Length: 355
Image (cartoon, rainbow, N blue to C red):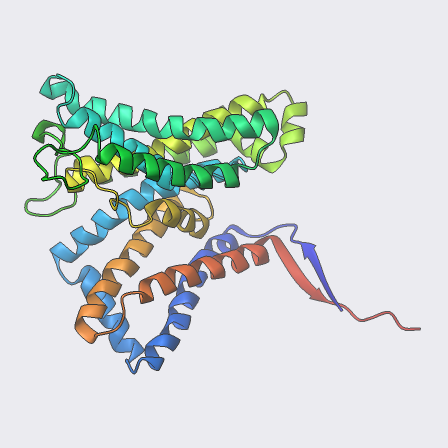
């Protein structure tokens, strides 16, 4: 017979090694379809590494791809710590992006020095607002936030399309559903000349460091972890569970909104309905791969961004489908979920009872 029981003391090295081992195992599994396609896995992974670290431009592209993933990964990690399952980061990202273009395209007469800070603040506020309704429904009526946030994603995307064909549409765009461009003074400064990586990366790293400190060293972080571990016990200890949930919901939504701001005001310069290739959903994978640790989110985002950028390079060099990147990411998540289970529980084999 097999018995599953909780682990009493899992070492820090064991808990940290699980995500790393999961990433390695996922790459090993991904070698199977490469072999089926007739490609040499070692050569293919060599092209992936070259595509990520082979030049300054390649590294900058990886950092550019990682920036929104850090924001959405932090959004998911903090919310999940409180057992608030925010699946709506994709919609909150678009809310932040819409706020950014509404302010940054000159719709309102705002002086240049105030424009960029206002874009950042209002983009974060728009993302936070997108998480308030699902949280209220959860606290007040016990509604499942997984369902409400997921449905809200589709509502926001429909609203986005309406706005891009209405108030936000570029009058010079010949009818194309895209917004007017963000003014130059409203754009996030680039970090390197003639490269796409921008200062949104610095903002993401600073916020990750703050989140790590607050989670580990502050009263707010203690209350958040207590609510996540056992909401009933936290309430009995005098913690206002509802206030904690609304607080982390606002922060989570704001971080997702900043992902939209970084893409609009840092990279694209305008808004279209295909701004995000799924950054909100990939952020969940980032958070899970990081073990819900803000510092781990940065590392996981860099890993996943490297996989995507490297897979594109490998596809061009070897004629292998770039969808391999999605395969590696999904395998990483599955391995992390299994590894997380093994971190918390151990499987024992026991002898059956004899007559």
